[in-house]
Image (cartoon, rainbow, N blue to C red; front, side, top):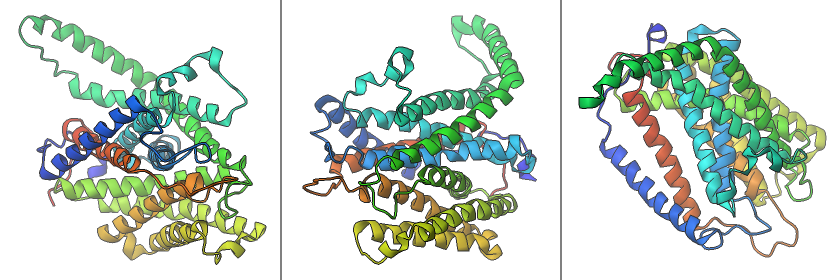
Length: 402
């Protein structure tokens, strides 16, 4: 089976018409990004003191962190619970997590007023142990470092035995190859510690993002505020990890004209039933216990978005994952997975600005054009780098042509 074959570069043409379109979006977003860094937040966003967390926090950061949960859920499944059958998802999941966390850090540059001070959390003299947001920042920074360490053997594998410097530099080929082999050996002996640290840190900061919602009970709509906020954020991030991997593998198989490993993806979606079911059960119990279901027919922005993201994009995909016919269907599985991924994004946007109701607000927050364009640019860059990585690095297992 393909799940037991060793990954290899896809070796396909990189710059297809679709990829060129991604590059155009990337460059447009980069132009707006430079403008923001030069002229500040006021010139490029509609955020203010009452709405300090807007589209960039909701989509680029909070949603990005949640979707990057694919990395730690896949690592836990294969290395902690020893489900070797799913080993083929490890490298795509790590790549997803690495790219998402990298661009979480990049997007934070745009969101910070004094973006040039982003290095401060690295200085112990500037630490603030009483801040939940500090804990989130420190965990993200540390976990991003761990992800690069976890991903480095994939890069080393690509170049070990293939160092071929030209001309006078050729004398360095053997020494460099020796160094690469030594680093790979050391990483192989210590990687289990790195993986355990990564899984632990992910659980910490996923829940800590939810803890940010607990401290604003009078500003967040009752449908979205709960003392269980940290558990909701963690459980939804765990639940969305596998659907994101499933969607990515199905899309990349279509893009590269390969046949997806449906038996493995079907089994993976079977696990998703239980993870997503746990999140759904927690949310429904919390609504019943606190009586917040009375707000469902309020027809406010918060209640409408709740119907869309929880009922339409969480409950419906959950029911779809329960169907064995849908789990065996590439199209049905892709739709269910993309629906829940979208639901998580809308949930994070609802928490951080749609259902957020600051005191003495004069007007509602509506993201500026530059916020949308820069977000689209970051998403396009993530997709482009993912395509480039699977093209040139051993990420995907060999598969039969579709």
